[in-house]
Figure 1 (tube, rainbow, N blue to C red):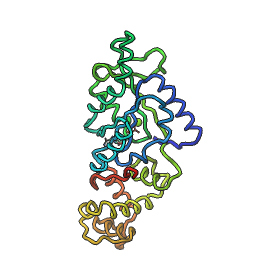
Figure 2: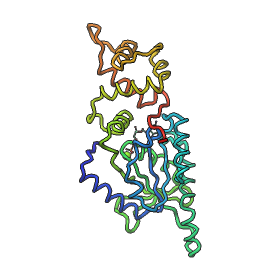
Figure 3: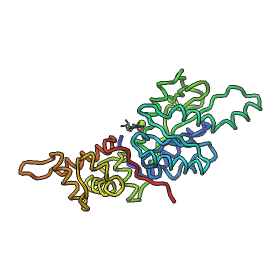
Figure 4: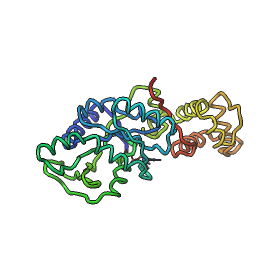
Length: 283
Ligand SMILES: Nc1nc2c(ncn2[C@@H]2O[C@H](COP(=O)(O)OP(=O)(O)O)[C@@H](O)[C@H]2O)c(=O)[nH]1
Ligand SMILES: [Mg+2]
């Protein structure tokens, strides 16, 4: 998928989400556990208004557990429901479903008091591209009991996935644009694969990644690439050292820089460099 988020696209996305929101009781905001802040769209609280919101920190299998715990406390302190999940294995998804149910318990109780019994809870997933929306939907679909068809008032083609006894999930997620105009955030989105590679200078991204890892996760680099301390303080030298260790060399003994760059970024994105988080909770 390749989206350039021009203002026109943003307006269209926002409008589409607003119309989907009318159909649901609760929103699951999907964030990347490695970069909860950078992968969030600042407009979500405004767009969702008073709707209950549950934050799911996805890809937690690749995030640093202690950071994820900090983020969970951070959101809980703000009174926001939050769960760490892994949409590939399904870890945490049961807890997510129960958090979604808890978040709307008041509303369901009010409906019950009015005599409306057994009303299903309707939910939708919201998130930026590549955060794992489809993977989560597929995971939840795997345990779905029934897949219901089109409903009156719903855009044709949109379906509800029935999960458990009384939860229905819209099978089309809301896609929001990622944060823009912030270099630090752009780096984190690029390195995690949230943004299209063509938009970035991948060498810059790889060098910045090495700089960050040397500082925060030196052991991960040392173990993965069999390096020894001290690591070169200049990222370019570190890149070349890793290239030599990995045999990314062209004829004439020159380092194949492009190959090393691709390798490091791929290894980071696939979790081979270990569990790494790039966003810390604000102080
Ligand atoms: N390791 C890991 N990878 C994930 C997880 N969820 C999604 N992915 C991967 O992230 C990429 C984007 O996922 P996708 O569901 O297509 O994202 P979408 O654009 O939000 O629908 C895919 O390569 C998935 O395999 C997760 O929890 N853990
Ligand atoms: Mg998708």
